[in-house]
Image (cartoon, rainbow, N blue to C red; front, side, top):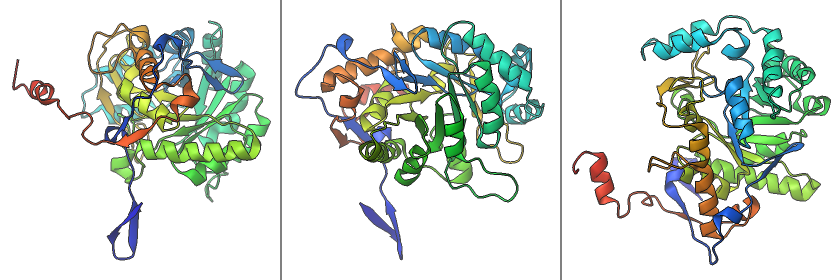
Amino acid sequence: MSVFIGRERKARRAYGFDEIALVPGDKTINPDEVDIKMPLGKMTLDIPFLASAMDGVVDPKFAIAMGKLGGLAVLNLEGIYTRYDDYESILEEIAKSSPEKATELVQKLYVKPISEKLIAKRIHEIKKAKVPCAVSAIPQRAERFGKIAEEAGVDIFVVQSTVTSVKHISKAYPCVDFKKLCKKMKVPVILGNCVTYKVALELAETGCAGLLVGVGPGSACTSRGVLGIGVPQVTAIADCAAAREFYYKKTGRYVPIIADGGMSSGGDICKSIASGADGVMVGSAFARTKEAPGRGFHWGMATPHANLPRGTRIHVGTTGSLEEILFGPARLDDGTQNLVGALRTSMGCVGAANIREMQMTEIVIAPAIKTEGKLFQAAQKLGMCK
């Protein structure tokens, strides 16, 4: 439904995670017996979790740890790991920087050219551990880096930018043809990011193996404040999932939707799947793990931009191991640990035996869902009671 926001101008109401709730089902299922596997390209992930291609989240060691636990971590081919052979001191420098100087420092550190030899080296490091390897690049470097990554043995190649479309116009540089790229690459290609039905459909038609959905919702992303663009995740996921279903009925080819960003708790992840996602890409939750390279800090992919940074460095702290964040046991009550357990339990409560059934869950508009009856919780957070 659209509403008038001024003379001759209408706007459509869109919804975020805090504005909806999932309705319990008329049957329940043992959480241990639900199927949460996620097909992606030629592989099937045991858990529908991807770690964001951010330098404070994924380095080769984290990618290995994530792979051994059944998920998939995406390494940023344009970050410090492909610019510096010995990157530990760089990470330490970023962590020790003051909040006022962090963005300026990151911009400076990312000026060093990317080494193509390091691209292959990082992929080899991950593959040596016998886990799936996924890497990402921006569209302008996709063809060159995709070839190098493919030769090095990568399993999934991600082409990612703040906003991705099939119809990109530029006189300054050649534009990548996603359809040709997907056909040329011998490994599955994931494209993103998008938030609308039309773009999701056009991207699916390129032959890609998956779509990333989300513009600006990430905790370390400032695109919405800097550029004023974005669509709340629930609406964005639902619209893109509708495009996926239309394309599937038309062609018989299923293109998974991956919700990227804005999920700070297990509940948000459950709502993402219920809104139509097949899996989730998470950054801040994994940045808080002991295995994360950021040392308790997390910064957006566009933070290093030389002229217009659209990310910031935030302090997230370190709250547990990657295994605890994914599988528990949870030692915090805020929903940031045992994310897999939360998804399984939610699916059990709504009676969804698998991800596809979870996508059919009844959703209600419920802006008071997190505050209704929570007087003492709210007071405790404000320090009004002990």
